[in-house]
Length: 370
Ligand SMILES: NC(=O)c1ccc[n+]([C@@H]2O[C@H](COP(=O)([O-])OP(=O)(O)OC[C@H]3O[C@@H](n4cnc5c(N)ncnc54)[C@H](O)[C@@H]3O)[C@@H](O)[C@H]2O)c1
Ligand SMILES: [Zn+2]
Image (cartoon, rainbow, N blue to C red; front, side, top):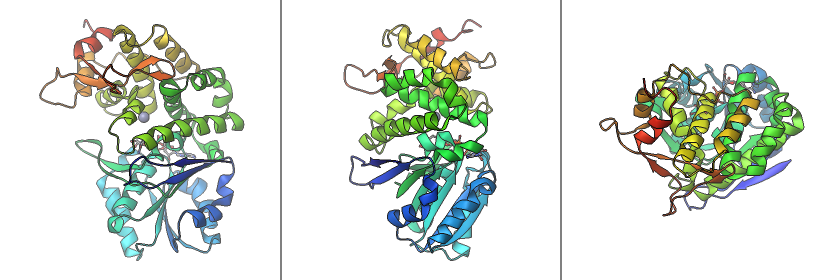
């Protein structure tokens, strides 16, 4: 069992523990009592996770003597919207849930964000405990206090920061996670190694087979190391004003690819391609040491993740998709770039991100001449 304390460097956000270990869910009643003095819990999960893990979690909350209401929403990113937020919030109101209750977000990243946002807004904010069940949620979405929903204008545009009271991570629940979802989470683990720990990066490459076979010890080690890296970054920069941008490695182009493909490609796959391309971009700009992109491609390949831009992604559309400024399609965009695997490159002025011209990116894309 491992405990990682997240102590945000600002006064506004609360300190909380991430408790990690295979079988840790068996001690849920004690953990809940430690984390929060709530007489009542709202257990929120999606329609896939509810039948798999909802029952046992509900029983352990019951065993702790607290009342628990189980609220289930349809699985999938499409549910991360205002409507589901309203349905869940209304259900809490109808059942007479009060300020002293605690939301238990049991599920993947969609549930972390959605249930977290319900907790952040219900009666101006009630306690929330995250119990992530997908690899991506364990090492990424459940940590750092970002909650929110998607709107037609874009993903995660409405939301709030809410530090969870505790994050409870039991890698044993990964047993039921579909292979594709496991792989998607591994993309973020590669990112963690790439931005801050070369030996972890190499360890993932060397242990890919064990990891993909879901060897319990390998998965636990991966989850712990990735959580250590993510928590260190978010504690240093709780409100995303500097260092947290390093977690965007692979994401500037990754998000662009997702957007161009109408969100049909899995986020983890888009980020994998984004990391390979952004490493190559860094090399082309003389910022990233040569050979880095090749090492990234190799580890992605070993994990069964893509690294090449799919032919259906038009380079010009991709460039446009990375720009937040809709009027100026030719604007420069900031990228988190590597110095080498395990080290992020800072600019001469200390910035965590580099301003890159659209030409530099276009240059690098395979079918840019078309
Ligand atoms: N808040 C943040 O900091 C942050 C960071 C990264 C990603 N996110 C968000 O996370 C979301 C993506 O998360 P995700 O990939 O976990 O998506 P998800 O929540 O949709 O989960 C993926 C799929 O796996 C299923 N699932 C989850 N755990 C399972 C288990 N143990 N067994 C069987 N099936 C299981 C889910 O039902 C779903 O079908 C996106 O909305 C993204 O914006 C947020
Ligand atoms: Zn991501």
